Image (cartoon, rainbow, N blue to C red; front, top):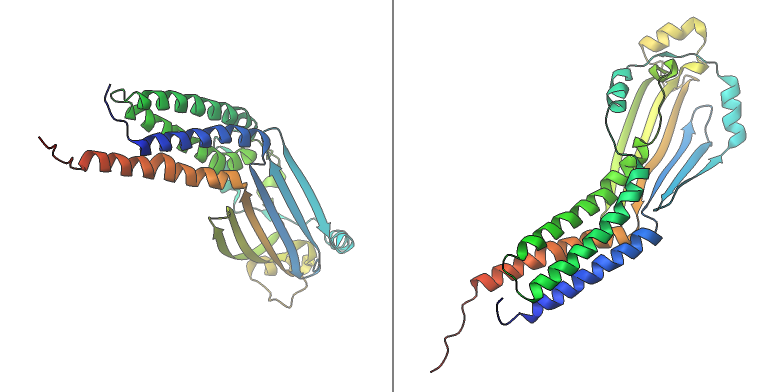
Length: 279
């Protein structure tokens, strides 16, 4: 063991333990993230109708709420159109996506709270070793920092993808067909890293085959008839994910307390020149 433990490191270890203990409480009792999809038809037969879907995920559940605007208009549109579809050009892309192995959200909901407890236990051990200045204790600190980073990745990336991974998209023939043609989408991402909001605003324009007469079906499929055609429609929407404040705070805490501060302190204490002692 060495003598003279710097006070700054003791304060840093104490703050790290506070963050790790708070993480256990937050993971168990707070919402992890909220997914939102809000769409509205602005042109075409279903204009003024739309739908808002909100998904709230915490440790125990993934609750979905759906709100439909202009329900009567939407039903009139569905009753007016027929069931005309054509083979989808994206069928190959869908099959590749279906083959991706994504860990289901249910498994992550069980694993992340356990990982938080393990991180807190490792933090206590690391603090004890560092307090007594055990040689090479920094290796445990590196492991702790990497493990906490993995928890952040699970909450920020894998948990949202996990909801998709737990869904059954089916293998029916309808999945390989589409009811619109000449679709075009303009999108713009909106990021607010400090509030934890990631959104994509998009506008999609297409032609609904269900509103095309059979006599002109082939010509519409080959070439877009123009925006004046009765099958033309425009959809405006926003799709995004809003992370819980504790997730945003955890990412910043990892960067400041488990990465930047230890690097700065180690650099300082290894490069500082001690004052010569007087005789």
